[in-house]
Length: 269
Image (tube, rainbow, N blue to C red; front, side, top):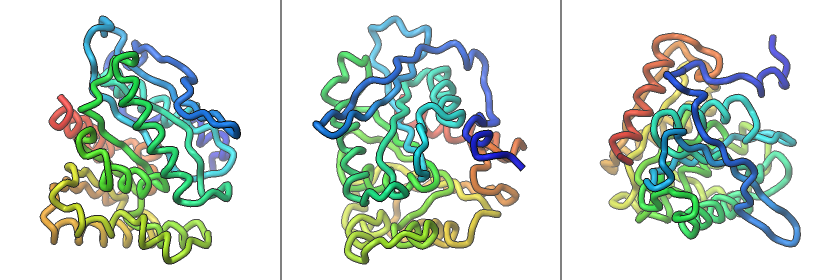
């Protein structure tokens, strides 16, 4: 069995040509207060001539305490994958519930990042009108909430991998005490009725062998989304477990990641 440190070094199992041939701008400050500086890394294609403004994909990490997520194998390899695919990608660190922060504080980091990207789009050579969110595990409800509640002029698609459609389930899974008021206010599933006509296209990937709490939350979100006629691409990995993109090197994993890239190509390019 792999140690936690070894898991953090694991890269995604999907590769394409020239995946190492990318530019990386490290440790850009996207949020600065008298208490903290939060950092992001920007991945861009090596071949970009610095004139073309590229669509950008924001990678939203999951939940764990004391982890520098933007420097882990999973997010580095996704950043390289997206840049070699012809897009810009952003890895960033945000607060986590596991360290005692609340939902609003985490969402505030998400807001700060998007505002930073929009306001600095020319300098960063990104197309602020073509932003996508790709979120994972415990980061899914934060990514979904951000893309489903605001920034409709900028965010053109959201990809969610093996995550949660509500915060009540996330709190149960992490054994955290999330108030009913916060869960109701911020859970993505509760935004569907209100914002159905404005919600961008969604790509939902679930792991068939994942924890029951996670999959029940995903399934409830999908069911309500379909009832409200949202645009949702649904991919079930029947033999995959949580983080199948790291641990299940098989045809279905490759297919889901490839289809995720095509989703981005369709809605961003």
